[in-house]
Image (cartoon, rainbow, N blue to C red):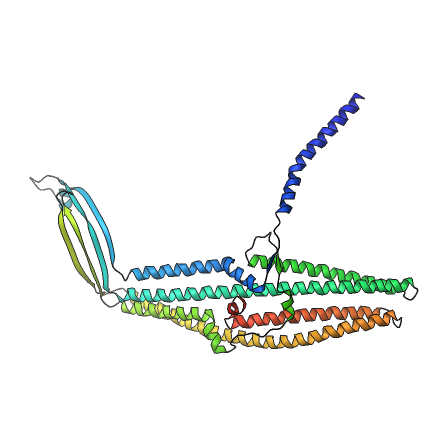
Length: 452
């Protein structure tokens, strides 16, 4: 009896210990559930604006442009006067024999120590140096190239966000269509069950309806999973907290087909595309580098000087000054100037080749986007009509089955046709909206269209 009582007390103590250990975990899980963030509702424009503020690639492009601006400031400073303040207090002692390489009778071996003191400002100013001038001009074009590169990154991020947002809208539309088909399949299954119970229908009709219902439920689960994955990708592009969920506020606009308000000429695309601007800046940089290399053969004139107190010590110092004009004329550079000119000329040729290739690529992108946009618009019209006809087919097949004229094979076939029509409509609408974004990107106006 005592042993049984002891075992029961031991079990109670063990249970209490387990409860005490689980309480912090339960409290933590409750806190985690309490800290869940509410969904952030975003329109397409708001999503694009948020990405342009938070996306890491945009931030890196901004930093690159800031670096190019500082490089420009460094190149400009070389053209401006330079001034400095110098103070020297030096003591020296040297070996006389080591300086002259021999001994001198009657002369001590060492001399010193000698003290020297100097303090004062000094300055320099390049009066004529075309290489510095060309370097400054090239740095100006470097800033423009960085600005164009930043715009290129922004355009690419906008395209990615728009595509991901449209993909999420497509996934949401697929979920809505699948849910509607599940409700229809459930109603048809209930109808088959009711007819079987009243002796009008057969078991095979009910079985077929049930199989169709399960298929539609499975398609709904697949569509829901694809929607979650698409929204996860959107959260990643927007650089949001991974625990943050988003809701799409522009879901109804997915079924509209607005016109694109953009200049659709190739000449406009060649002007507005930031990649063309970046190449134009690189072309100017190469030209300035070539001219700078050629002009390095010319003399360089520099003015320098200083004013200072000099003496054997600070109390004995007196004012002194020094001014000088330096003329540097290169006579022989061992082929350096010619090599620099050749390198700049090769860079210029490479940029011109890239420019021709980019123009051809832009022309292809614009023409392709226009063709796809026109085709997608026609596809949307056909798909909308296909959905209406498929819905009518389902209604008629359902009425015929209710009247007992046919079995529900026609109903199942009509349901499959409606599913294909829904998929065709959703895909056509997605292609239209994506082609619209592709055309705006090809014209260099996607940020103007979606972010402002």
